[in-house]
Length: 293
Image (spheres, rainbow, N blue to C red):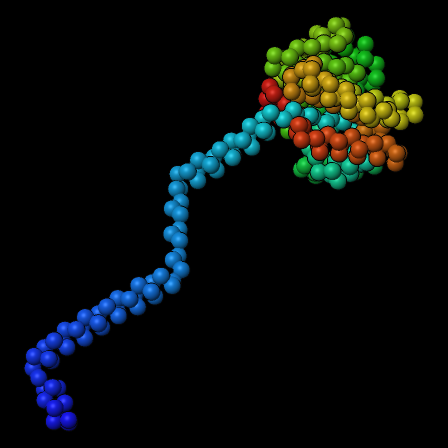
């Protein structure tokens, strides 16, 4: 029996048959293992190809949308007259606290009326977040009719204020008059003042009046309490395009009206309502269309 087995194992024909079969079996086994192993692995998804040109186009489109929205915003210019006086520091503090741009129209002689007013002026000069503009040197001594009868003296008065205060812009506001001489805007509220106002404009000043005045009691100096009405007037005037320049509104307030706590609180309220309105943007007087820098 053992001899027969040995004979079979040594049979050359049998060995020739077994070797290829064994090789084929091994190859098939390896292929099967490879396929099963491949199927068991989770294929990693291919990363998307980023189109840099498309990204830049999308970024530019977003930037254009933001810029367009800014252009469409209606512009409001908050201005304060007659400083430095007793209310000026309160106004300045409110403007800084609310972090808004504001323009102060200064009366030259008020700078020297008292040591405190001189200190207030220094505070205004050192603050880079606000703007200082010319509201004459004497404020016509509150005698407007005789003041405007002498055009040459009106020009000299403003030039004295310009030199004394060192204003860095040529924006001026007439005392006691709502007059305009900016670009194509030519408006005189009281005709007898026209010659003097024209002379000042010819001397190089951009004369800015106002669209809405926040009224106050000239005896008690208390500001008008109807803040809701003031804000509605602003909204309505801008919506109707009734301002001197459509889409732009100049608001006039007076420093001396903000001496009491309740009046200062009203100032904060009005500022907050305007600055938080998404349709509005607050700007400096020098940014008004047509003002030459």
